[in-house]
Structures are given as C-alpha cells and as structure tokens.
Amino acid sequence: MAAIVESRQPAIDATDGGDEPKYAGIPLIIDEDLHGAVLVEATLADAAAARRLIRHLQWGSAWFDAFVRRSSGAHNSDIGRRATVLIDTVNAVISEPSYAGAARMFTARLAEMFQCQRVAFGRRHRQSMRIFALFQSSSFERKHALGRAIEAAMDEAVDQHMVLVNPSPPSAAYVAAAHESLARENNGAAILTVPVMFRDAAIGAVTLERFSGTPFTQEDVDLCDALCSAAGPIFVDKQEHDWPLYRIAWERALQFGRRLLGPEHLVYKLVTAGVVLVAAFLILATDTFRVHAHAQIQGEVRRIVSAPFDGYIRAQYARAGRVVREGELLAELQDNDLVLDRMRHAAQRRQYQLELDRALSKRDLAQTNIARSQVEQKDAEIELDDQMLARTQLRAPFDSVIVTGDLSQAIGRPVSRGDVLFELAPLDRYRITLVVPETEILAVREGQTGEVLLTALPDRPLTFEVKNITPVTRVSDGVNGFEVLADLRETDPRLRPAMEGVAKINAGERRFVWIWTHELLYWLRIKLWSLIP
Image (cartoon, rainbow, N blue to C red; front, side, top):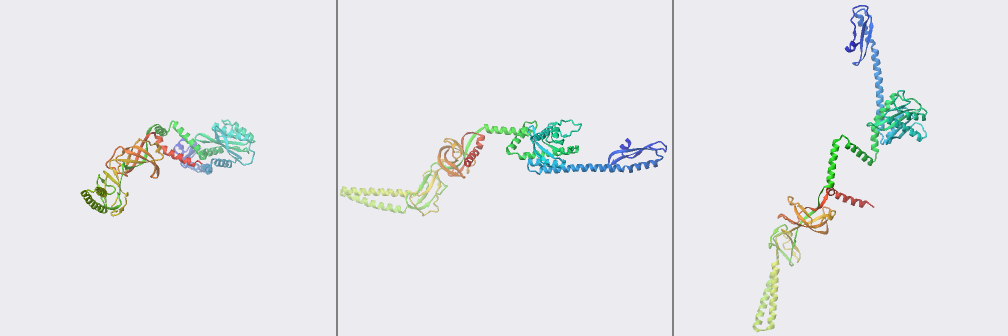
C-alpha cells in the first residue's frame, strides 16, 4: 500500500506462477489529487492474470470518481447558495438609508430565510441590550415582561461572546438560563441568539424564535453567524450617519484622544504637540500692534499765487510739477492799462508841480498848500501804479514745487482778482495725512510713531510722529476712516507732494492671537448685533 501511494502508480507483487496469494493495487487519483488506494489479495496464475486484475480494478474505480465528483458538486452548490444569500442580505441592508430601516430589513430577511415567527434586533445601550427592531409574523399583544426576557437572552449571549441555541445540545459548555426562560414563555419555542460584532466588540444581537419548536441546525447557526458578522460594520456605519453634528464631533474627539493617548500613532502625537506649542505661543506671546492706514504726502505750508487784479494773462513760465526757486518768474499779466495810467498820473503830477512852483513864487500860501497836496496825491497814485506793475509778474515766494497750476492753454484769458493761478509747497517741509479705518481709530494716540512706505519710493520707509487726530472722515479704498496728521521725522530729496503709500502706526503691545483675530471679532459683533431683532 505504501509503495502504491508513494509512486502514485498501479503495483503488483512479482509472481512466479505458484499458488500463493498475491497483492495488487491501484491509487485513486481524481484531478491529480490522491484520494486513497485499493489493495486486493488474489491468487494469480501468471502475469496475464495480474494485468487483467489491474485492468478490472481501474474499471471499477470509475464509480468512486463519479461519487467524489457528485459530492464535490453538491458541496460547491451549497457554498454558492450561502454566498448568494449573504450577498443579497448585505445589499438589502446597505440599500436602507437609515439605521432603523436597516435593522427592520435585517430582521425581515432573517425571518424569511430561517422561517422564524419572530426576530428581534437589539442595540447595545451602555452595558445592556435594548430591543430596537422587531419582526413578528403574527399579531400578538406586546408585553413588557416578554421584551425584558428577549433582552435578557441577548445579554446572555453577548456576555459570553457566544452563539446560544435553545434547546441546547447535550455537550453545550455555556449557560442558557435566559433562553430556557424565554422558551418556556413561548411554549417551548426554538431560540437562536447571535451577537452582532464589530472589531471584537458587541454592538448588538439578534434573537430568532421558531414557535413550532423545530430546532436550529448547525448549518443555520453558521449561516446566521456569518450574516451578523457581515452586517456589523454596516450597522455601525448607518448609526454614525444618523448621529447629529455634536455627536459626530464628540465621537471624532474621543477617537482622536484614544489615538493620542495610545501607544501608537506617533504622527498624531507630533502634530498635536506642534499645534499645542503654536497655540500657546499665539496666546502668550506679544508683539507690536501696528495700525495700517492710507498715507499721502502734503507740504507743511501751501502757498497760493492768485491774480492781484482784474486783467489778462500775457505769458506763463512754469507749470505744475516744476521745482522753482525763490523769486523765479511763474507768469505775467498784461500791463498796458497800468502803464498808460502811470503815464497819465505822471503828466498830471508835472502840471501840479508847475502850479506849486508858481504859488511859491507869488508867496500865495493857500494856493501853495493846494498844489502841494495835489502833487503828493499824484505821487501816491504813481507809487500804486508801480506796485501794480510789479504785481503783473507772478514770482515764487520761496523754493518750492508747483502743486497745481497750468496756464499754457490760457494765454490771453481774462482773470479776476483773487483767482487761484498756482499752488506751491515747500521742498523741505512735509507732513503726512493718514486715513485710519474707523475700527482702529481708538488705538491711535497723539505722540505715537510709525513708518510709511510710499509707492514711488518702495526702497526706503520713512518714520513719522502722530500730531493731530481730526474728526474729519474720508473714504479711502471703500473704507470709511478718520484723518490723522503726522510730521515726518526724516526727509528725502525725492519726496514730492501728493505721493501716496501705506503707513503703519505703532499702537502698543498686543497678543498675537488678538492682533490676528480682532478684525474678525469686530465684524462678527456688528453682524450679530444687526441680526438681533
């Protein structure tokens, strides 16, 4: 026999033609798998008889091949049926949108599959089971005692982490007192309780009852256990989807805490430690709070050059943007009328001077006084004409830059007394006009310092000091703000009036978290106040 199994070939004892019994055998091989061997003891007359015996044994082994193949087919068919039932049940439970619907569908499927008159699904609540879904094929009066008996049977199975069956087999090594009590209340019903597990923890249990008393087979137990194992993760997922937001947040926090305090998950610990350190730094550390504001350069003094009298523009020698020195000619007004008027006054003065000389020669005191008064009057009028002629030349009062004024297209245009022709600002004396947002104006005080970075001079920030906080409001970049005046502590020869930029005022020490969040907090307060009726 060992030689046949080892060689996997037919074998026979060597025969010498005597009458002693001989042994012949063949291996039983199906699809290259060895299932056994057949050994026959017979009296063989010669080698031909031995070959005939081996051939008959091979022919006879055909029934064994057919038997094995039929048994394997039946086994495979049973496995396929179970797999189909398992997949259909899982799909039916998954298709339900809620946890309660999934539980009801599961109990209905189990009742139909195992021909049970009542199936209860219990959910674990703290340390005990509570019936959550119940399938009942016939109407009955619900009793509190019956519900407690079913829950006790579920607790009994969950506490022992076992599948419990009633009636129990003689060799059962578990306690089933609650199942026996439930069976007595239902006139000896057959009961099967299977815990629903998820990650080695019981999340629920199902109790199946057959009022006919037909016991559950081992095949039923195995199939129900497989269905509950597959449905456990599904019920957990359905339950989590039904949780409110606060419950989801709480569970996620507990899960994160377990990972954080457990022996593993080093990345979680490092990330949490980093977040805690950053949060502590933001809460405890301080820095200079700087108020941002829109800034504009202005001359400390702004001189207006206006028309001294009614007249006409003769010529222009400078325009806006040009740097001029003190006394430099800016423009001229026509002086024809003034020259003629001076000539008339000069001729009249000569006439009055002659009358004065004649009166003096006659020693006429009265006439002398009259003529002298007339000469002095004409002297005053001539002096006025000279001053008016001098005013026709508009000159720069100091070294400055022309801020506004361009008369190149206005030659010959009439102007009235007091019309503004030019505005000038000094080159070495500037101030800054800041527009501070109204949300930050309370943090600004006179005497605070800061820096301004101009758009035209981005390579050098200039320091300044706040001098005056005005109650004048302006809109800058869509933000309402207050005007704040500041003096430059340093200057630059490249500065020009009307240059703009961004200023930052040092408004004291604040915590980092307040610096970065106070604007959002202010905005939220205003919005909440506006929404409150």
